[in-house]
Structure formats: structure tokens, C-alpha cells
Image (cartoon, rainbow, N blue to C red; front, side, top):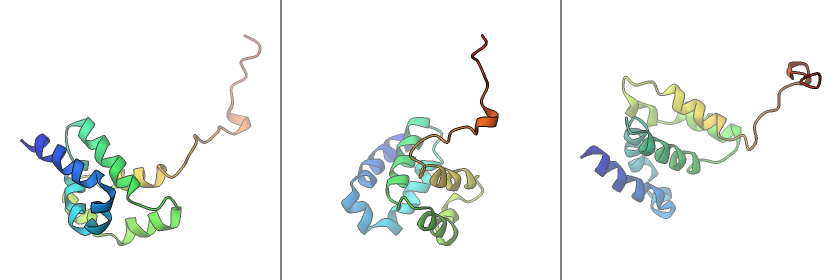
Length: 107
């Protein structure tokens, strides 16, 4: 039953026009979706949560430290979701420094 509710809630949250208007109301639903044991639903809510925020580092840090959404996580581990918000602003994988690259030319 919870999975069905979260699927419906996802479609509401995915409608960006509704989401921007009712962000404080929908944050609780997003928190529930992010805590879901269903990995597909959790991934969908992570994408919605990520899209709802500005892509810059400072706005995201500001949101993480000033937002009340973390109260909805109760006793669960919310830090992983906060870190995902920060890591998702990178557009490409970070290259390894030259000193850390493995030379495979002799093989």
C-alpha cells in the first residue's frame, strides 16, 4: 500500500509546477520516498529532490544547513541524502590525478 501511495506521490512531486508552489508541503512526502525500502521508488524521489534545487554548491549547502526537511527523517540516516545533493552537482566524473593513474602500457 505504501508503494502505491509513493507512486502517486511521485507523480505529484514530478509535476514541477505543483512542486515549486507546494515545496514545504511536499518535503515530507519526499522524505518518506527517500526512506523507502523500494530502490526504484527511492531513486525516483532522489531525482525529483535533486531537480528541485539549484545546481550551485552554495545554494545546496544553504538548503542542507537551513532546511527543515531533515526533521522528517527522524532516526534515519539523513546525511547520505545530503551528500547526494552535493555530489549530484558535478556534471562529469572527477579524473584521477596523474600520479594515481596506473601505467598499463607495458602489458
